[in-house]
Amino acid sequence: MKVWIVLMAALLAGCAGNETRRQVLADPATPPAIRQAIEQEKIRVGMTKEQVIAAWGPPCGYCYGTRESSWGDTWEYNVFGTTSSGIGRGTYLFFDRAGTLTGWSD
Image (cartoon, rainbow, N blue to C red):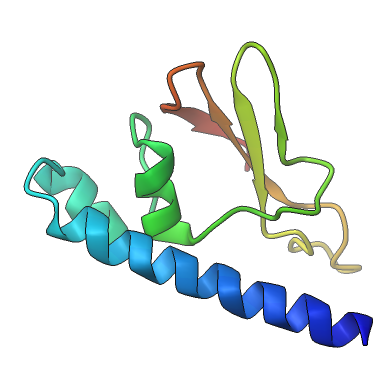
């Protein structure tokens, strides 16, 4: 039963990312460089949270690395990472108080 719940949550999160992607790409206020990054599934410093979701989908909602703080938010992606064990090498995105992407970990 727990596996089913996790799979459904992942499916719904993907749908949310796709809808956000359509909205951001349709918005004439989205700068061309940001639009190109989203189409290539890349992120850039200066993106809004919505633009990041449009490019990469929503962050991991159950991960320790995804959290809010008074100075800004941290989102975790790629939970299983790229180590031989596949654990603990997530990518962390850092947002300022205004919700603008300021950088990420490698």
